[in-house]
Image 1 (cartoon, rainbow, N blue to C red):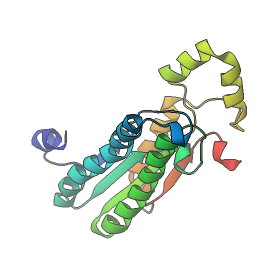
Image 2 (cartoon, rainbow, N blue to C red):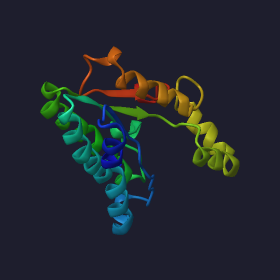
Image 3 (cartoon, helix red, strand yellow):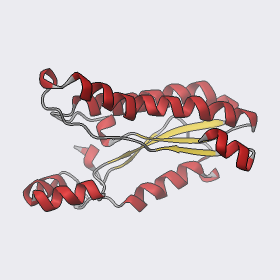
Length: 180
């Protein structure tokens, strides 16, 4: 991905690392080790390898902006989701460590931490379990799920020059979920 961008445009100014899977797996002692490994590989190690490729490309051009997607679960605990919570906490820590290492070299590295966003997966859950959806919405003081475009707006802000003094930040975009 980075090599293709460099070949096509000659530079990499912004990267948004937004891959992730959600894994439940039950209580910690019941989590299948394969689910644990897969979740950490996609949600945390994927961000590591992405930044490992992006940072050298950005250094060649004097800097850039990297935004990683974590989750509200990156600062909160969620029962029966130990692998997801561990991976998303890891993304927050990795973002901070990388920002500390590269901010003085012109690369700002931040994270967005979404609450529940109205995605196809959430819509499927809504169709299958309306009571659960009511419970989940009630956890968000704003009274609704977020929209993908609201995450996109936060990412665009963090990527822009308007955020030139922001680095190592974990921006909650969660409808108030983390207030509790």
